Amino acid sequence: MRITTASGSPAQLPADAVVVGLWADGSLTPAAAAIDAASEGRLRDLVERKEVGGKAYETTTLHALPGVQAKIVLLVGLGDPAKFDAGAAFRCGSAAARALSSKTRNKIGWFLAEGAAAPHLAASVAGAHVGTQGQDLYRAEKKRQAFNELAVAGGDEKATQRGIIVGEAMNLARLLVNEPAHAIYPETFAAKAQQIAAECGLACDVWDKAKLEAEKCGSLLAVAKGSDRPPRLVILEYRGGKPDAAPIALVGKGVTFDSGGLSLKPTDSMTTMKCDMAGAATVLAVMQAAARLKLPVNLLGLVGLVENMTGGNAMKLGDVLTARSGKTIEVLNTDAEGRLVLADVLNVALDRKPAKIVDLATLTGACVVALGTETAGAFANDAAWCDAVMDAARKAGEPLWQLPMFPEYSEHIRSEIADIKNTGDGRWGGAITAAKFLEEFVGGTPWVHLDIAGPAFYDKPRPWADGGASGCFVRTLVELVSNPS
Ligand code: BES
Ligand code: MN
Ligand code: ZN
Image (cartoon, rainbow, N blue to C red; front, top):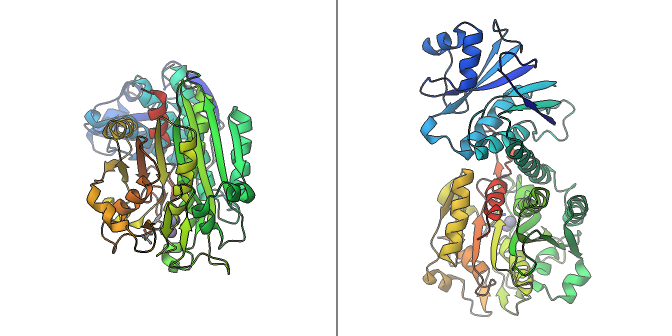
């Protein structure tokens, strides 16, 4: 999608369509007012007769308005002006782009966030990218088409550029998640990471099975044993900060398919399990965005890539593994594999002495039970770092909710035969006992774990998003690492 600048009135822009916002209280945005004036009050008339509304994400297509050059005026509801934040700007942008993306369009005038603050403009441009890329990777007839040209009003080039980079990063994450497990598995994900790293100037180290064995990654390797596909661990590095500043480590769960292993999932729970590498995809996307934005920060991105399968050599219930840290783990459920992968990846991260860690993982169904599908769970061992992550999510407008980490929960993962076990006692508080397991592997480093099992993959579309991969938390993490403290 080529991005250009639109100047002047939306009524005068020669384009296939112009996108204009409408507030829920009926008041007209400057762009809507310009269309209204050019069309001798048509818009206000429609609003007053309640033919069109400004409810968030509501879109209305108006054809051939008199006085307007573009054949189509797409109105998009922006909701309550008092609640309009970067999250709303992203979602409204994506909703508008979706409404226009059903066929090839040459030029779209983007007046959606004209006059809005820079973060809102950037978020709306990111939304335009996400709204025009669907999950129809293997359909002959595509449901979504990117525009040839998006002409952005507002004249803030820096914000526009940021929106493009963040939108493209989200689409990278979404593409990797939407690709089936026959296309994206540990080796192909690692190859993609190497390609991205070469393109945007990141250092990239890939550990293969032999290296993982030499490094004693017994916990990650145990998960990989059930698959014919060998595992990988990818370490990306971006250095935009002071040479001596300790990096922030971003760690991602990259289970490219989760069958559950011998604790096999039923079909209905397994159908979407190509999404179990969404944490890893998010980490790769954020590393790409950080490098392209030249953010003043040092970052490490580590992703553990395995397929959780049931092959003849698969790990068994009752097996005791020795993680890279030396801790022993009793396996009581092979479907609690994400924490086994992350145990070793977090330990590798510690070697590099990061200042802080954030991990992202589609870790537990229990988190979805607790918070639903819109909200991710946050778990932390450090209040200040947790506040920083929560604050970034608030600024990005992505729903995130902190869950408790009281020491009592740790009792639930004690094992009789090993140091710890990979499930809690019973299923209560499963998202928390999983987080407590991870905490065993971060030493004292300030750490936040984001359980994105709910929002990572939409089983049905939203007004602002197609079904499938959501690209969640790319915007939050870019926000977080943009202002390193
Ligand atoms: N990948 C799943 C979690 C998941 C569930 C992701 C729904 C996305 C949507 C994870 O590996 C898993 O299977 N967790 C188990 C843990 C249990 C066996 C302790 C779960 O949540 O049931
Ligand atoms: Mn699992
Ligand atoms: Zn999993």
